[in-house]
Length: 343
Image (cartoon, rainbow, N blue to C red; front, side, top):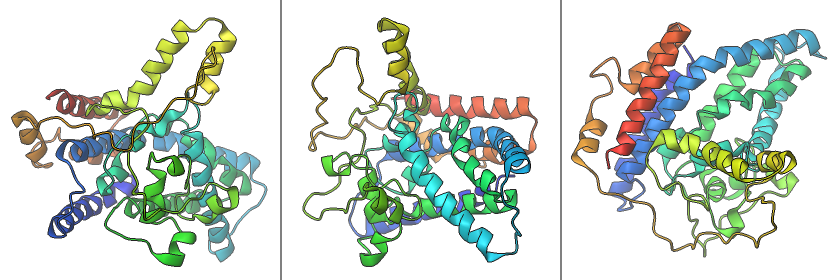
């Protein structure tokens, strides 16, 4: 079973604690639809990850066996230092790659939440699992053993969870070295000073070196979400919207050269030069819909009440055959899609 699955109860407990603490502080950091959508997106992503993780590790092991330029001793501290440095660098590099081209705008669903809380950390794309492993192959070329790669990847993933909160203030010098809630809030912002900033996962020093670092401004609160809002609670549509829009644009664009430019150019590229798109107004209201009785019932159903529940599917999928895993993924997608449609 994927080690990250062991952390799911911890993640859910932290979300519940943040909700309770925010209420005690008199601050509203959660909205019903947004939080449940984030959880549904997370369940979908983890199920897809369970199907593709083995394949990515096999490819990593093959590259390691055939191309590795250094043979490391797992017990030597140097391998862990190098692995950690490579992991933080790869995370900093993969994030802009997943956001800055139309083809790879796969992290948009992660940034589509107009709230910022611990549940947002679980709002991960299901489709980015197809190619993200490519960014870690340099670690195999350097010779980082599979076991070290898996452990450092798990540490990186768990660490990034805590930075998705509004309850932790600025932390002084820590904000200038590590990824913290303060500088990660900027990464999720649609304020002009926040766009394309703070890509790091654990260390923020890479952003400082590459010129992509920004500090949270006290006089301008971060406004969360994307410039083009998702305006839907449907996790399936959230994962597919970018591809649907891309397909429509390609069909309407003449010439294969221009069609390929649509795929690989930055978002917003068009055949005819147009004025730059204006961002959403900072005071634009967040997307919201009434809570229906059906959604309330679905959200309050205990995760362990039946075997088809999303949480149980995530735990059962890794030990199941590929057809069963695919069935679990379809079941979770259907469950999430139904919740998004019951509006």
